Structures are given as C-alpha cells and as structure tokens.
Image (cartoon, rainbow over all chains, first blue to last red):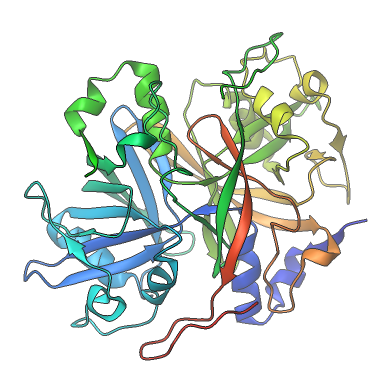
Amino acid sequence: MKKHISFEAIMNMEKQERVHFANSLSGFKSVCLIGTQNKLNQTNLAIIDSLVHIGSNPPLFGMLFRPGVVERHTLENILETGFYTINHINENIYKQAHQTSARYDREISEFDVTGLNPEYKSSFFAPFVSESHVQLAMKFKEKIDITINNTVLIIGEVKDVYFPENCFREDGFLDLEKAQTITCSGLDSYHKTVQLDRLSYAKPNKTITSLL
Amino acid sequence: MKKHISFEAIMNMEKQERVHFANSLSGFKSVCLIGTQNKLNQTNLAIIDSLVHIGSNPPLFGMLFRPGVVERHTLENILETGFYTINHINENIYKQAHQTSARYDREISEFDVTGLNPEYKSSFFAPFVSESHVQLAMKFKEKIDITINNTVLIIGEVKDVYFPENCFREDGFLDLEKAQTITCSGLDSYHKTVQLDRLSYAKPNKTITSLL
C-alpha cells in the first residue's frame, strides 16, 4: 500500500518541504558544474541539476534557470559572452560543487572559495573545472522563456568534449561510471552508480540482450 | 591527458555512434515510463529519459519529444486527452521498460507486449504502471516548440504522487534509493545507485555538513 500525496497537499506544504519533495519526484538527475566568465574575465561556477539532452545532430543540451536565484550570474555571463562549460561532478569534488550553490556576491568567484581550479584550453573563452573528468565546451544557441513559471531554458551546442580515453566505447557510448561521474536526487543528495547492464536496441518480437 | 573530440568530429561520426555519444554527454539521467491512453482507451507506454524539473510551486515537470520517433503515440495521447502518468523504473522492470522503446504499431499496447500491468486509481484517466514504486499523475499544461531542432517540450503539473511510505523524510525529501528507482546513461545503460551523502544547505563562510 502506497502513501498518496495530492496536489493540494503539496501546495499546503511549508515552502522548503515542497521544494525538497518536488525536486525528488523527477528521479535521479544529471548534476554538473557550469563554468562561465563575464567580459571582464570575472569567473563564476554554478551547480546545475536540470541538464537535458535536446538533440544529437547537432549535439544540443538545455538547462533551466530560475531568474533571481543563485545561478543568475551564470545566466548573465552566458547571455553576455555566449560561452560556457559543462563539467561532470565526481566523488572527489561533490562537496565543493555543492558549496557553489551558496549565494555569493557577484565579485566573488566560486572557483576561489571552493578551491576548484579553472582550466583554459584550446583558446575557449569560458573556464573548465580542472578536477572534472568529463568537460564540455558549449556555445549558446537559444533562450526560451517558459512563461508558465518565469523560468528560462538555455540551449547550447557542444563545441568540444574532453574525457578519459579509457571511457570511450567503439559504438560511441561513453562509460560515465568509469569516468566516476555521479548523480543527484532531490536538492542535496549525491550518489555514485553501479551499472546493471547495457541493453541491445529494442525491436518488436525480438528478445533484448546484454551488450556487456 | 584527456581525449579531445571536437564539434567537427562529432558531426563526422556515423549516425548511430553520434547518437550514443551525444546521449552520454549529459551525465546520468532520470528514466521513467510514461503511461497514456487515447480517447478510445487504447493504452500506451513509453520510456523517457528527458524528464526535467521546471518548478515546485506549483510542481511542474517537462519532458522532451522528438516528433516522428517512437514516443509519438505518447505525445498524441497527451495532447488529445491532457493526462499522463510518470512511473519510476526499478531494477525489477528495467528490461521491460527498455522494450517499450521498440517501434510498435499504434494498435499495440506496450503494456501487453511487456507484461507490465496498467493500474487505474482515484478515477485518474491515464494508466499507472503497477510495478513502479513511485508514480505521478500528471495534467498537461503547456507545449513549447523548440524550433532549433524541431523538438517539443511538454510541461505538466503533478496532481497526485504515490510512493512507499518508508521513503518519505520529514523535510520533504523522498529517498529514491530506498524506493529502488534506477538511473540511466547514454541510450541503453541502466544503473542503480549508492548514496554518498546528503549535504546541508550551502551558505557563504559556512562549512557543509552531512544530513545523514
């Protein structure tokens, strides 16, 4: 027998309880660090758990911003400069990554306060996180306003990808577990993963097999 | 030393390799089954890995559809009826969940071919997956066209949530690991999780502590 919580019960929750609950409902999430800098080269780093795959040809990813909250400096830098990095989080840096969600003033860089190191390469404008094992250079493509609750979907295109060589499989799959990428749930829970299987392409009337 | 793959190299990949690679880049993802039926009560079930949290007040979630692919029956049913369910996937049902991605004809229900059982409750129109431990009843709110690559973002509001009572924490957090919810990476890799920690709300000049 399951517990049932209705829309009305959710709306009657105390604000922080509702935020924890609603953030838990979408399952395990991608959690990354977004690296940016403004035109004065003031760097910024923000943890984001709303990354979503939009397309493969070309490779496009979206992420959601709630204006007025802590990630606003990241959003401003992306719109001002057109570039950002996506850096996967691993077990060694998740506490520092979480600390970037604190409300620092504009002139404070989360790189400085967390001790994570900015890394510049291939003359890409925005800083990568040196300690991250999977790093993406992103070019801003489109901003979509989600008027229903005043959020903003930022879509970017992948310009470069950096990752440990031994994580690449010949069919194009990247072994994120081997790269030590972690996942999150709710607002503040971090998890490593244990692979169950890779499954073959599903077709009607054909039994799925393991790809491992 | 990391391996570097450029935008040009991604675009030069063979199609299936690019799809595997691009789908890997966003990290571990939420993976759920979307239950729908049309006005003639023909049921449909589709696996989705693009769920994204849009807001908490009210609780809103989005998911991305690529028109013309296998999830099109799900999209049609949502637009026709206004209702759908989101069902978390656990270790016991992930192979059946994966099988729903095969291209079945319109008149075939993925419930029938996978053996997963539709469950109706509280007079909600769309079918839940009986074997799922965390189930959400969703009402369609808005369709946003993403013109850059002809995809569609469907936003819905949570009307009811069902989950195992022992997974609910008093601060509103839902322990998805205890609910046996799994995650996925790439197109076809499924993973269970091992919690590292829950971390306290981050503030400047304050050390993060464990909530466990």
